[in-house]
Image 1 (cartoon, rainbow, N blue to C red):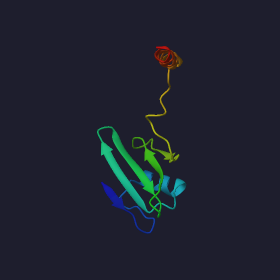
Image 2 (cartoon, rainbow, N blue to C red; image 1 turned 180 degrees about the vertical axis):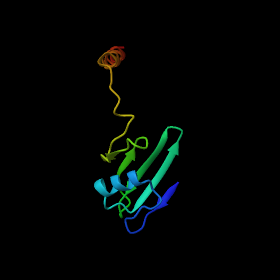
Image 3 (cartoon, rainbow, N blue to C red; image 1 turned 90 degrees about the vertical axis):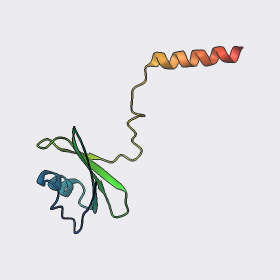
Length: 97
């Protein structure tokens, strides 16, 4: 669900979310709200349509997460060095034959 925001006022959002936006992203003009069984997430956009950051967490313990540009949760997983060594070993063996 998308919520348009005008005049940097957010009467339809919880007070806790409003204050986090005012502190961390005063240039927010659009807020996208998504919810599931685990809670809600608020994604803040500036006038150019660029994501500024997100507000995550349960009511009473919400926190601001700035947008870090090219962050991708799938690429942030740690890789086991042994898996890398095994992969290199296989490619070396294939090149020999």
